[in-house]
Image (cartoon, rainbow, N blue to C red):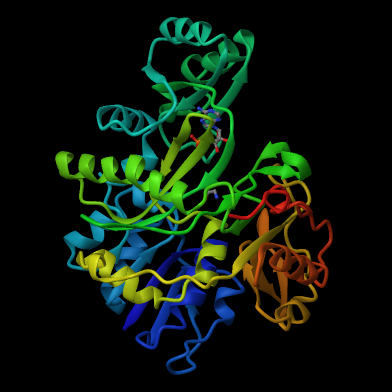
Length: 434
Ligand code: AMP
Ligand code: GLY
């Protein structure tokens, strides 16, 4: 089969790397890809993966490319093309594509839609309400003592959630979003939620319209600096499994989150085929959904796919065709850890074009895979080309050995200003494993 993967980050490198191992894959394009993706080869025939210089949000050119090359399946990595309706566009033209359609992708693209859906179908989330009127919004925030999350409805480059701990802070947040329109149209409506306390983890479930198969747990580290300090980022590192939710807890999450979600989708006629990625807060009262994402997490994908034993293409095919019920997901009984190496200054402004060395030495280590995110080729060298540059990922028989292996690989890699967290999975190491 010939495949087209859309996207250019670490998540897409992990998807391409895993798909390239499938004996069914004879050709693989990635638009636009990155320097690491361009180095992958197909296990079936040794052919290199071909990067095509078309951006992930350039729907007209992606469609034209797919109409010309006729891939058997297109796999969408990022959220924006999903929210823009790439799945509907391709399907209308008779092209097979994996990912939720525009209506289903609203779980990520609209916080108002998700909040109302969760309330309607009894999915545990934070107490919250939807506002367009700043005065009404303020009243609600004051009633919560100012301890709230103010969320712009639409996609806002991951920056649309403002965490407030006092009334003045909440008033400023409401002013920014609803009055000053800091996020433009995305902030025409806001969801205001009570602030939840607890440990945050990531869940993923692969869905085929009627069935949802839950993955093991993982945890991301969203703040830029050690000890969860500094600004929020796209994610500085992950590991799987996360010991904060044991097998019984995961079964409970399936029962109280996934099952009502599936019932709600059926009742609303939402045909969800793709990954549902709920962000969960483990509170004293049980798991609460903070948000739904309609795609694989980045860098959750890097730890999940290094643990996955199934042929990923077979899973995505089953997700598209509605036959997931017959498939069992199989996971290596190992732990996986991904440490993100970022450019100096990220998530603020940063320089590009710094030469990266030591990639071969890192890759030569056992059970280690260096996924590229913001990288490019320049004059025969691999250089930095983004905020998150690499996702250095290692498997180990348990979490301590996976952590040690990932950091041993990180130490071999150098580029000017490289920044990474030194405490990925540190909290989990202090928890008794279930
Ligand atoms: P979201 O995009 O909705 O996940 O929000 C981004 C981040 O804000 C989450 O990963 C949480 O760390 C935090 N957050 C969102 N909602 C809440 C809430 N109700 N209580 C506490 N933290 C929250
Ligand atoms: N891991 C954070 C995200 O993918 O949104």
